[in-house]
Image: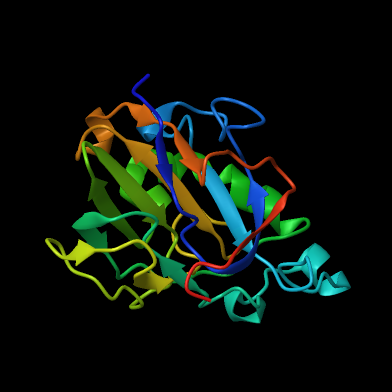
Length: 206
């Protein structure tokens, strides 16, 4: 394993931690695509990502119903933009019973490669490591390859593209610009790794 890199949280406000490497490694249950130390952040308001209703149990929900949809995503470190991908649709969110059917389709997305899982994304180069911020809102990315970023600069907005059951931000780091050949790099956020279920509050550029 390469040396962990410490970064800022790539957002402001309250976000719920899921699939944290502080609780298990590999954090997402797989070592594919250098994802062993990946972490997910779900934007929340009042501690919840969206009202959970009877409808949520049986039907997909529009991503736009979630208060975190469209929340700003920020650069977590001084970096150079390596690559962007910004034309995948934001699909419905799957809670309750619909999430079971959605989970059964994950194998087909894996077969399509990392980009099908990441959806709209930005890859930043920080030193010798690369940081990917994934599942961004379609047509929200504000940066271009080669652009120099400072920590806290806006790069796009939280969406529900790629392999995502509700609007959230997937963050991972790796050691090669080609993620299919890369090894994972561990991340810490302001010196630590938050645990599953923790709501982290960032004042970065609030």
